[in-house]
Image (cartoon, rainbow, N blue to C red; front, side, top):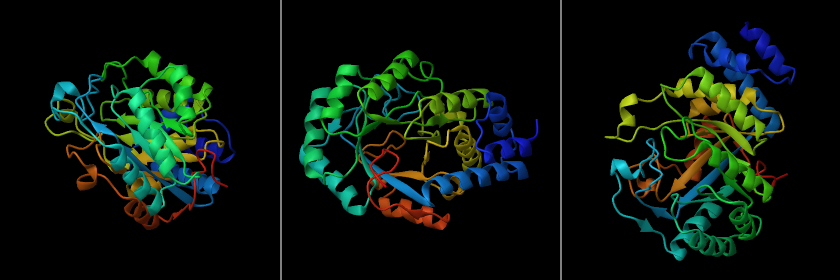
Length: 333
């Protein structure tokens, strides 16, 4: 199989096969062929967006030891990183969201741990929605939900959700892969636009696993897909497995872009980095409050980026940024 033939197929707008994705993922990350893959992904991303990337922003309503026990998450109850729950007040949540809006975030995400009370989430979300401009895009990042609850999210003012079937779901977490898939279907049936990602990628994940996940995310016709590497939580069992390099992540981000239909304009990566942006990532996140990759209670004092710093990383990588509501969720022009 020849990488140049695969890239020509991509340039012609054709869908890549599983075998072709595996081939591209198997290239040495610093090989000339891998750089050509990144260049093609960058070309597609810029063509689809007019060279204007987006910065979304996420606030967390709570921090708590979580029984979902995702081994890659600082909230995992078994790891004991956080031992007590803390919650934002409605006033604090609204203040965070307004700050993101004022900073120019193209969408505002509201996140909780898996067991946060759903009715309380709706109550605070309605207050956040009322405190923002009507055109500001509001996105939920919550656990698995029934169709009835998905419809309540829509009624509360959410445009969409972030939801992912994570790599080795049910092995590295206690969550059901079947239920994750069903929740995505529920969200879509309720009229919510789903954004997703191939994550969290570690050194142990095979090219075959990654290709299968790329194809799964493509099948959703999401607002965006993309790829994110696992950030080790110090002292946890999974931290011993290590982390992939930013260059390897950039390669996976690029292959994910080539695996998406052209109707999917967004291609995300996290955490924000210039290599990801050069390889075709056109979506970063700013963060405040709790963060599943951070051991700080307020990630703005730790790993979290701001809207301004995300824009600066895009600018360093040759990207302009979109002004206004997110196009990936169908709100922008």
